[in-house]
Image 1 (cartoon, helix red, strand yellow):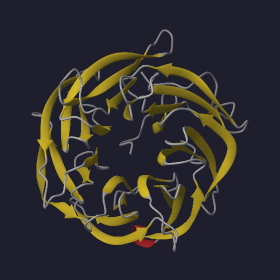
Image 2: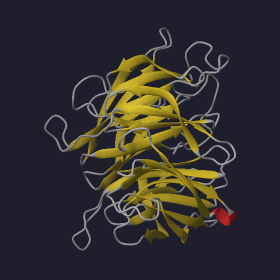
Image 3: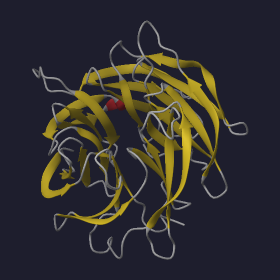
Image 4: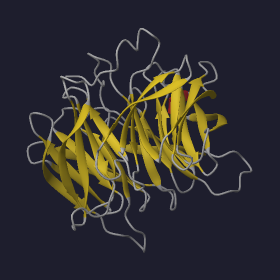
Length: 373
């Protein structure tokens, strides 16, 4: 079963449905389904779904027709846990419905990903300084927490696990620890559901970098990491064993900027020729050209269309980019110039509350094609 789009949107020039995970401390449903027609310059709210408290990040299981959203809280039902809420597509009505809940130890989850084989979920707990592995049953539903790693502080610094996801080969698993300025590499014992450290699999970044999100080049030979605290992107060469060697680091901010800013998200464009990142504070999208051996050159900066661009997504055609501006409570739509790679703000805008995660649904019969970053 695939999570579909509405009606005949593709033929009419519409994009697939856009899923929006939000912080809902102010009340209301935390998950929205939005239809977007860039030609007409229109966003349309298609549905709102209750997905528990603060479903601020999620992953999509297209094959099973499920969405797994983390609940970014430090406590559930009096216990120091976060949670996972699972939404399922109702085949009869086409609507999403809440179908499962699970507690995840240690609290404060901020990222969730799915192993390509569909057998496990990986969860990073920012607040709890830990990660968790969750086994999925034959229906794709969370069945049990099979492993938890709790990290220890170093020299007064607090561990802040921020993103955990498999690499392109689906075997190596990469974790950014924003608090301890490092990347950890693991393998997963598929029988026991346990994470195992890899020899030479810990990479230190400069102190104070704050590695947050990452993505791989299309051929898997390069890893790009955006660093929240020092507003940089670090480029790593990836060897045949999946190990990392730093080859470049660039600022995400324009020369001369002296204000406060924190990086958030990054993604490669569909062509692989441009890399995009967001600056919260400077409130911009930074665009880099990908040049020889995966290295980067600055292409430019574009205002984000709001305040505090926490997350963004590029549509499957590669022609449009949508930004979730958390503090101005809006989604902003951009067209991507195919030559320069720079985003151009379009008139379309959508008002929501504290948007935190955006992903496009899959078209009927379409596969995710590997790991979604």
